[in-house]
Image 1 (cartoon, helix red, strand yellow):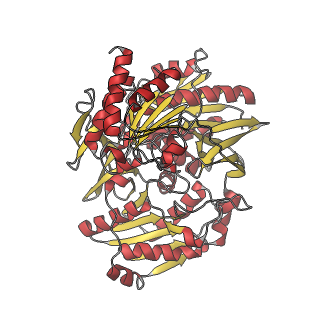
Image 2: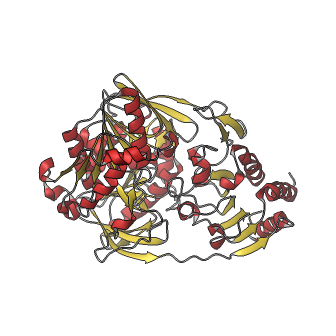
Image 3: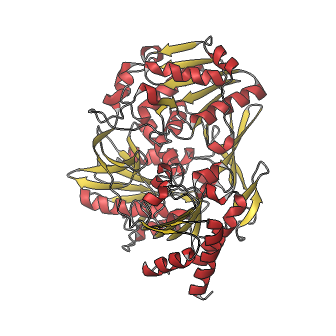
Length: 258
Length: 347
């Protein structure tokens, strides 16, 4: 089975974040990590490979420096990585990104394409669905369990109450949530092996994509300003168990909640 | 392109989502600001009832596509119908609720028709002939102002509770729209499960993988619509810890929420998660028990009118953005609080 896991490089969740003069998020190389949500997709790709065989490819659209992040993914396992990197891609919106990933997925070929359910920088979660549309394929989204039998994939999908079961034939795209697995840590052996695994870089021309359909010029949204949010809270503190419940009740009564 | 503003309604198994009324109310308001017509697109079962509710929120027209195909397949049939309607009528804006359904449908339609797409809008203002959107960023510590650019319809996803429901009264003209046939290449919903006993009181159940998980009572208000929320986090110590949260919620007539830590630990289903990767809630009172208050949690509940926090760690970040913070043992305080609330209410 041909498995492709789409991964994104995001700033560390604890990194200080600010906008540059172009109103884009300033991305510093030293803060770059694998999007934490994508680690579950990586782990699921590796587990499906252990069950069904085949190849695992990590696919990323990002700056040239994202090769380091892809090596970290390859240290967890997998066979090879593909980085789509091109100066013309800077400032792509979600749909522009989806166009690139869709074109790359078509070029690589896949039975199963895995995504994290969102990225820790934008929390959009719209890219997997957009990629599925561009490829004309179903998306099994928000999977908390994935079972592949023969040419069919079945997921458990978290619903308001309980779970849904959703199925689709291969090839299929699947986005996963954290509940699906516990990502492994790279072993020393894995780290050593990762250095010898093939890592290809593709440009827009390699994907035969028109530069006018991606990047900042094609983005349909723009940032026009940003402001800090000030907090206005009373901040009363009550210390100790004794009388605490009574204080909370009195507070709720004062606030006309009770 | 017209000056019309639409709302995408979310109907699941015949039930209209509350957020659909919020976006319908806003669509009606924006359409009058732009001098266009407001409409809602309702797809699924029981669209006639949905059309009545949407009309009462001021939309002039409802495109109603009545079919089970929308429940039988994820997203694709809804995207198909909505894309067709947008191509035909070219509305200026389509508002959708920033739920899993809304985002997945909007992403497909935007990809297919190359439309503008913003999915996390907390507020908006009309400036001339366009909207300026406020999008929370970096865990809500900043508000980013965004506009659309380029030609064609734009899709605007509203965060839950970003806009109020305004039942201004009114009746929408209903236009029937054909639904797509069953899909040959679709994500087919083959069955819900884990819903047994959904009506019963909160209880310790089993997750699909066999571990214990707290199943809150299904009879309470949805988190996004709840006026009071009692939420639990890692400080509860395990799924059983939610029993006391449930009892306090029952006494207050509240809904049960949870932090990501509690959900990640498998103590309670994801549907109860409040925060950046969970629900955005806006209750009158939010009572956080054993929740440290990471910035991602704050992003989901920071706009509650009142925040009460109970935590044994006096340095927990939540004490920096609450109205009343109690430094103490929740295992002692929560049951006492439940008893005190019951006594006060005479129940």
